[in-house]
Length: 333
Image (cartoon, rainbow, N blue to C red; front, side):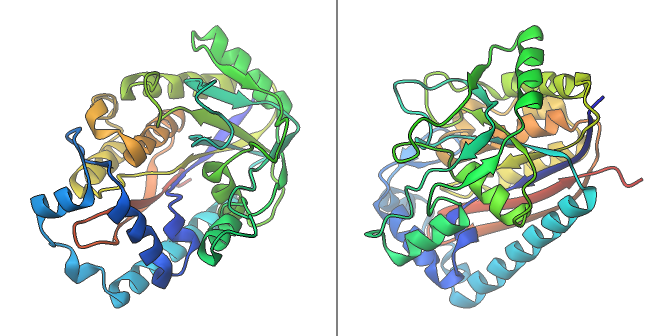
């Protein structure tokens, strides 16, 4: 029987692949973004956001503060990588979201599992004409070229069949036909690059549609899928140690510390009711990746949240950025 031995959660913002001095490149994207998402469901451009909240974060977007936060995030990721190494899993299940890297509007499943032998990443950020900071981001995401990484086909098929038997309709993905046009994206490449540290541990990617309406699942539905995935894992006849990782989140592209702290409190308290009740209005755009964490929390419900760190990474005076979050679910014994 397979055993879930570890749960992890990590943001995968580009800021974590760049030096803090380069965060200004992402701030420039915010200034030009006509659809900055607020947790009440509204969408604003930067000028509208600034007019509403004022430059209240001007004092925390200095080079000194950003540098300190970058170091804290790097230390948190190192701690998670050390914990993963010590747990020595046989397979890592990564719950992430595709952002037009593998899928497209022609086919956007609610949830898909990959059961091929090789995970092949997209090379979309490694093109020679890309700016240097984009190419650096691509390296951090394993999207500088088409990397080939080991899958876990036998376990993945067991999980697909187990979810289907449990009433969860799952799309299955067996290969990447043309790495020059599509491939696995940053939700998977960042975790593999930063936390696995070059070890070729087999990975089962779970692709959850968080970004693209109309078929984005609710928080309640995602939690139920997580419980079903946990049941499918432990029903596997293979003697495997499994680590489960949430990739992405929390709030962005406008940081909402209140929302993030409520989510973290629900993880600490194992408050499934609170997690299931998070409204769709709070889960648009980047903040939708909170769904990856909710699903993971359900999968690792048998484990306590033993450690977490939260760093609101503001990059503009109006509060755009990422609620960068890092967490470990692990039994102390």
